[in-house]
Image (cartoon, rainbow, N blue to C red):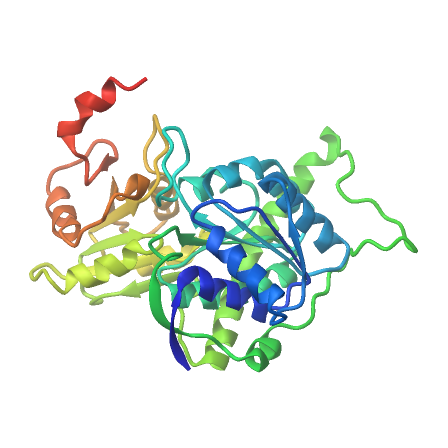
Length: 390
C-alpha cells in the first residue's frame, strides 16, 4: 500500500521491519527524526528491541559494536559531527568485520557550522572499511535499509546507508512499505559466526604486529571487493519479492546513443531527471552511483561505454585537490577502452539549492576545459566577503 511518509519516518519503519534487537542512538540534526521515530515505535509496543539512549555518538557506535559481537542484530544512525566523533569506532567495527547497519543522514561538516546537506561526512570515512550505499529517493532508502542488513550479515561487514539530510530525511514522499512477512522471507534471523560466548572464550581485535598487519588489511580489502556480489544478489532478490526493480551498483537513465553523461550520488539524481525534461537538445545519459564502497569499476566502465564526456557532479570536495568521486572515476576508467573525458564539478555544498538550471549550466561548462574542480553554483560576488572570514 502506497502512503506518504517523511523520509526519516519511513527509514525508522524499515529498520523496525528488520527486527534489530539493539538500537543505540544519540540525536543530531538531521538524523534525529529517524531515532525519534524508532523510539516512538518501541514506546508504543509496535517494535521490540533494546533502545539505548547514549551520551554521545562515540558511545552509540560502541554499543552497537558490543551488541553485534554478543549476538544481536544492531542499528544506529548519525550525521556530520556525529560521524566524526564515532569515526574511531567505525574503523573498529569494520576492522573486526562486525555486521552493523548505520544510516548516515548526510550533512556538511563544520567549521563553519552548517546543518544542511552535503556528503562531506560519509566521504570523510570512506576508507574506514564500511560498505557505502547512496540513495536517490526515500523509496530507495527504505529498500536499501532492508537490503543492508542482509548484505552486512552475509559479508560480515558493516553497511552505511547514506541519505541526503533534509532533502530526503525531512521530505514527504509517496512510497511503499513492505509487509513484515516479506521482510522476514528476505532477511533470516541474525547470525554472527564469531559471537562472543563466555562458555567458549575468544578474543577479537587483539594486537597485530607488523608481520601480519598487511595481511589483515588485505583480507579486509578483498572482503569489501567481494561484497559486490552480495549487493547485487540482495537487490535482485528484493526486487523479486517487492516487485520494484533496482539497480544494485549504478542506475543508468537515458538514451543509449548519448555522448554526454552526468554521474552523481544521492538525491541530485532526481533533480537531474526532472531538469532533463525541461531542456531539449543534447541527449544525456544520467548515472546514479549507488554503491561507492565497493567502488564498482566494471559496472562504471559498462555504464559509460560510448560516452565522449562524463560530468561528475559532487556534494563534497577534497580541499587542495579535486572532487573525491571524480578521482576514483578517473582511476576506474583508465583501463577502459576509449574512456570518456571526465569533467568535475561540485554543487549543493552546505545545503545550497540545486536548481533545475544547473543541468544546462553543466552542459555549457564542458565546452570550456576546466583545469580543476569548480563549484558549478559558485557565487563569485560572495568570494571577497568569504575571504575575510577567519
